[in-house]
Image (cartoon, rainbow, N blue to C red; front, top):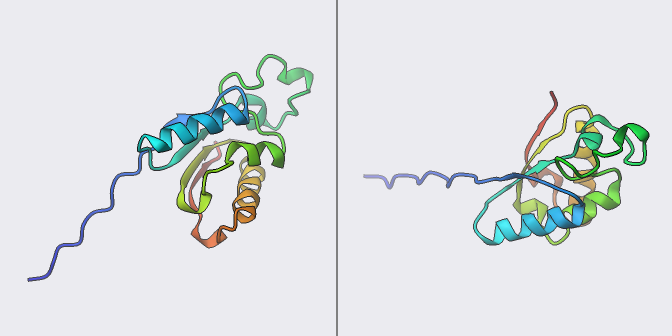
Length: 125
């Protein structure tokens, strides 16, 4: 009789992101410490639509319903002290999906991650 292969544990992610990259990072690290096993990033509307946070059309929306990320520094702060090679990250992004995925990959590589080991999904409606 062969030993039955165990199922992988469920991936648990909370769709979250708010106000600033720093505040969102604190939330992610707190949730991971409590047993969450992945990340699901909620970006704010200016980030999802590609507006600069200083643009007049972004006024009042920056950080309101998700985390604002407008450059590599924001992405670095968002994932500071989170080993991306060990994460399964979902990003609901829309129009800026490829640009934000590229920033994510750069941050992971700066952490020393093998890009082939990165896991997760992007959503582009």
